[in-house]
Length: 290
Image 1 (cartoon, rainbow, N blue to C red):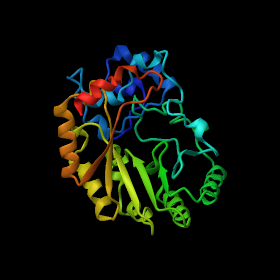
Image 2 (tube, helix red, strand yellow; image 1 turned 135 degrees about the vertical axis):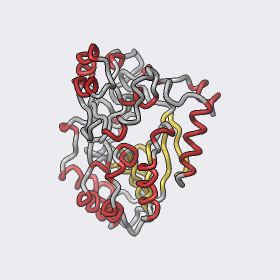
Image 3 (spheres, helix red, strand yellow; image 1 turned 90 degrees about the horizontal axis):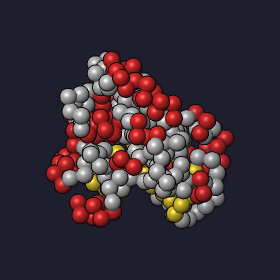
Image 4 (cartoon, rainbow, N blue to C red; image 1 turned 45 degrees about the horizontal axis):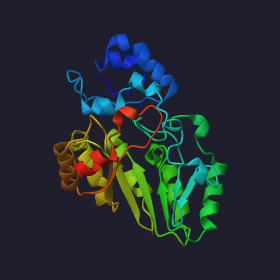
């Protein structure tokens, strides 16, 4: 398989990851929701397994175009809690700062799937400056969470500029970065990236991973580079039907995370984003697994 990021039905079919008869259906999903599968993740997919948990997370499915009555365009209420573009202030002491809406891979269950990968939703430099001024003028904010999109999609130069700007705000206690990049593009985690994230206030990274098979040796090396560079790692995982909804799979994931010195942190039920019903378990099923 080449190193090209797969984005279309033809590319997925040529890679042996989709039935050629499904090309039009895949592209119909792609016209509505962003599609991208980097080669690093595509290589993990077993094309002989119709229930492959990696494929289920990333390969578009026609079911995504069916919207249930209780599903929402903005399922966690970002818009209602956004005082300025690119910033969400839902809880008193922390804010989400979204400097990009681009990701290296688009998860089929994403709760921002109506927005990610769409250039029109990306904040401008002026938007970010307004967000910084809002944080500066709100002293009860102690934590800034960089999310999006994936913040590590940005260049080292832009990340360094963002971290430096936040580091200069006296009432901030720490920065948290939520990212799938070390899993999707482990080669992106370079010494230059680690240097760009250094700050006087603590920087924590929350790694998104849902299955132990995602945590390859290359991913382990990327995580080790971050940890040795002074950036502690936590994890966030989404409880997904057909991916990790059994005790054995979750146990393997948590053990692998701990082996890589990543502290298990979040296990989410998926939000009610449009076209994601096939991933959801009931709250009772989630509690039983825990």
